[in-house]
Image (cartoon, rainbow, N blue to C red; front, side):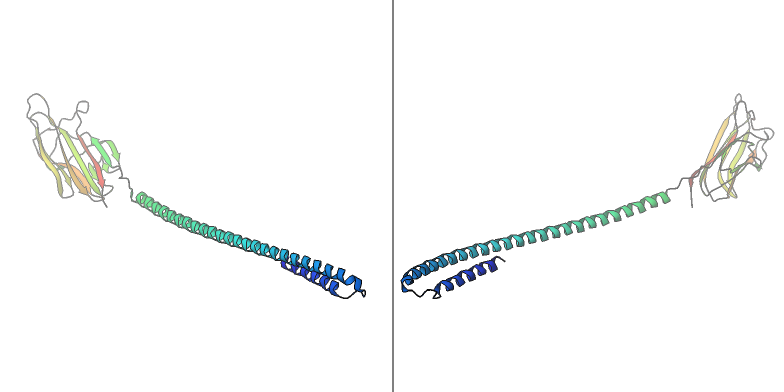
Length: 256
């Protein structure tokens, strides 16, 4: 727009110059004055042309400077946009990475929770004797149930039935009368878990002895205490106010 305006100025000046050159007066007396004016006008036009060219040069410089600044700003904006896109891509990658790590952590937590299993509590303890006289091959029944977590002990038969498969520990404690003995065994089905001889050889006091053993049982396996041999007559001291004859057992660890 600026260049067009300048060209219009040049055209006006040129037309004015032609108007002055055209013969408008017949008298010769004014020719000298006319030449002088034309010379002044020509000089003025030359000065104007120089100024216009100088203005054009300044305009070109300004345009080049503006274009250069705009190009620099454009490149700077493009670089900022590229940097922003790169930052967004990096943040997205980090976010995806965190999501994967979180999902993996959740899976590990779930796996640990699923694998964490509490061993069930199985424990029983019974005391007392139905008879003070033990015979050969007799199942010893302890009728008074003290604890029966897991409901495995039957105080009517004296037999413990494992509610779950696993490793169990059993213990028997008997108090004998003076100079009496008894051979006892903790048995499971046809297997002997532990057997021993309990004896009282004292002339004054009655002795109490214990025996214990470990057994791996399947669910539904039975365990009980039996006497295989004993002295004749009453041989077990039955006095609950003084001593307890007991049979107990507990699950140590469940198996699968």
